[in-house]
Structure formats: structure tokens, C-alpha cells
Length: 231
Length: 235
Image 1 (cartoon, rainbow over the protein chains, first blue to last red):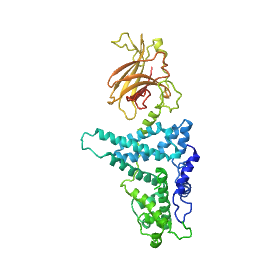
Image 2: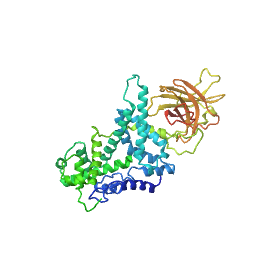
Image 3: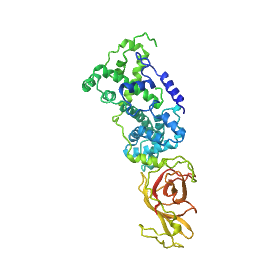
Image 4: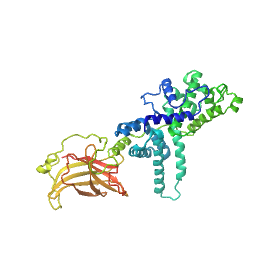
């Protein structure tokens, strides 16, 4: 629950992680975030310097017994991720609205169970999201009038895992801002080469290349920290 | 890792992960686990990102947060007795003073056409307060509630239409404005006009919000935090 514990977790992740050759210490976890936000100017609303996920603040607010405002911040920050995962898994915006509501009500009720030392706040929210989606699939299976109704639950939940990964990355990419976010978007989703990107955005080749590398490393690190997986 | 070893340009490793042709020296890469691992871990990000045709994010509609705050305003662990629980206020309502003493004085108030004498009960009942019950986000149920004063005590009559079918039941509550305290009045069925006795001595100018919750037969006597309709009693 305490801030030192948060640091400890992040540090262990960072030390576990391989440091890229030629960039000693410039890219891991925490410090990387500070550096890249300065360089890239990502942070518009000035998030606290924890994991950048509001988790430490939220846990502190819960501990103080008055977490309503912090929870609203958590909702604003993380509801698009929950909603996007739900929309893809369940197929409609209405269903995603309903699921988002269920997830955050569950989160609120079990708020004292969130321990920043045990994992990131979005990771915790994704755990709840997985469960609520599984509930929803189970409801659908029960409601299905036709015995041949599909899809099987296991396939659905396996699908959810992949969707969570996709959306965590998409969400972090969106937060990179301009130009790094746009550069990497063109490289990853539009599959343009760095030369094509440099031409399209009228930027020097070297700038584009170093943005691609930094952003890609950042997404990898954020992905690991959020889902707490040493991949 | 041997720091003297000449590794690949990290920018080139990132390009390789994206599938671009690079200037990476094949011979070095073939023997360097560090460079291979760097490419592999970045490639996982790229591959995962590209595994969706639609990376666009969506946001929940406005009503979702309203529904959540509605649920938050009623702590699931609150007992039906008064508690000092910290809760966020429900949406602000006009602060027109509710004239709780009207009942005692037997006043007939203007604006609602005077006192209503309810037929068919053992003693004449005077409507001393009423509330229009509006659906909370996610519901379409509407209804009304009336506080009636009779010789044998006060009661709330609740009339609801459009209650969704449930495997549980619905429960009527009186809440304070900030939902920091609540009193259970009893269960109601769908489509029914139910009359529930009020606990003698309840301060209706304090517990002036009528709330109907969806409950399950889970043996938990507290509010489920799922409210269907709400309205503020008004004299």
C-alpha cells in the first residue's frame, strides 16, 4: 500500500528487464517515463510520478477513507481501456457501457483490495474486466435458446486476453502524443517504412528512427508494467 | 553482457522488429543474444499491436459514470441503520424545505389540489408528502410515492410501473439527501401499488429520498447498491 513498495515493484521489473545495448539506463520503467515525457511532452495533465497509472494515489485515498474523487480520476483515466476491451469482446457499445459500469462498481466495492505493491492499477482493472466479461459470456450461454449457440466460453476468454493486450498497447500509443505517437502509429498500423514516414511528416530520417525506437521501447515497458508480465 | 562488444544500433533493432530491412550486421546478430532478445521483445509489441484491424479506442457514454456514482452513493456494506459511512452526495436537489409538520398540523397544502382522501382503507388517509420517482441510468421504471397519514400511523404508498422482471425482489428505502443513512421500509412486487408502514418517529425531513433497489435473495440485508428509481419527497 505504501509508496516505497510501489517503487520496489517497479525497480524489480526494471532490473529484470534487459537494457538495450548502447543506451545504458536511459530506457527502463520509471526513469524512462520521466525522460520521455520531458522530451516528448506527453504529460498534459501532469500525472503523479508513480507508475503513471494513478494507482498509488488511489490506494492512498482509499486508505484515508475518502476515495471518491480519486476514483473519479481513475475512471476518467482508465474507463476508455475498459470500454474498448469490452466493446471488442462483447460486440456493441451498449454492452460495453453496461460492462464498464459493472467493472467500476465492482472496483469501487472492492477498492480496499487494491494493493499497488501487487500490481498496476490498470492491471487490477483488467482482472475485474476479465471476470465481468466471463460472467457476461456465461449469461449469454444461459440465455441462448438454441442448443448450438456459440461461441464456447473458453474461446471467448482466450479472445479477451488478446484483446486486452491489443488495447493496452493502443491506449499507450495514443498517449504518446505528436509526433512520436503518430510516427509509431504509421509504422505499426499503416506499416509505412521510416523513410516513408519521414517524407509524409516532413521530419529528418534520424528523428523518425529514434522516435520509433524510443516509443516502441516505451510501449514494451508500459505493457510489461501494466500487465505485470515478464514477457 | 560485454560492454566492449560492438552491438547493433538500437534504432536499427527497432526497425528490424517492425519488419523493415535494416543495416544490422547479420554475423553479429547471429551470435548476440542481447540483440536477438531486444528484437524479439519489440517484435512481440508490434505483432500484438498489428493483430487487430481496429486499434481505435472507445469511451463510455455519459450515463455510465452517473450510474456508477449512484451505486457508489450507497455503500454495499452499510447497514440499514444510520452509519457514519463516507459517501459521495447524490445529485443535488432543490432545497425546498419539506414541511414535515404538515401532517401533525393537518394542513392542506396548495399546489397539489389539497388533501386526498383515499377510499377503501379503514380510516381516511391524508397525503402529506409525495415524490415522483424517476429512473436511474440503466432503467426505465417510473413511479410515484405518497406518504399518507392515518389514525393508525404513517405509511408510504409506492406505485411503480415498468419494473424489470427479476429473480430477486425490489425493496423500498428512505435515504438522507447524501445517502449517508437509510432505512428499509420493505419489499415491493412489480406492477403493484404497495403500502408500507413507516417506522413511528422517523424524521421525514431528514429521510426524504425514496429509493427502490433491486435485491437478490442472498440473505444480505443491506442495500444492493443497485437503485432503480429515486425521488425526493415534497410536501
